[in-house]
Amino acid sequence: MEEPTKIPEVKENVSEFKQKYDGLIIHILGTDYTIRVVPANDERMNYQEASGTCEAYSKELYVKDFTAENDPKQYKRIDKYCKKVLRHEIVHAVFFEAGISKYFEDEELVETLAHLAPKMVEIMETLNLT
Image (cartoon, rainbow, N blue to C red):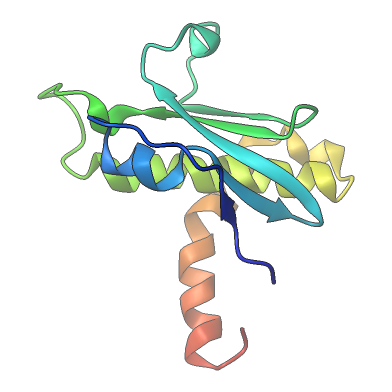
């Protein structure tokens, strides 16, 4: 499997989550997708209540960066939540690239797989199946 590549860009005063993932190019079933970490109030995301979106035709995954906010009502481990959102959007992209459009929009299935993926990987690694 190819290693993801990073679009070179130096930014100051941004969250660790944004530094790590924004601009990262990942390979999903042979197609390059770019991860875009955007502010929680980004106008491109205002039309939906979601924390992320998979733009399958532009090959971009958008995730709101809640880690940059200082909201006391936030999750205590908001970084974990942002990673879960990114996994969720990756699952959407996998379904799209696999040509399984009926599952691409199945939020319940996508969310379930995004939640289970790390646990499944751990089991597979324990058995040396990766």
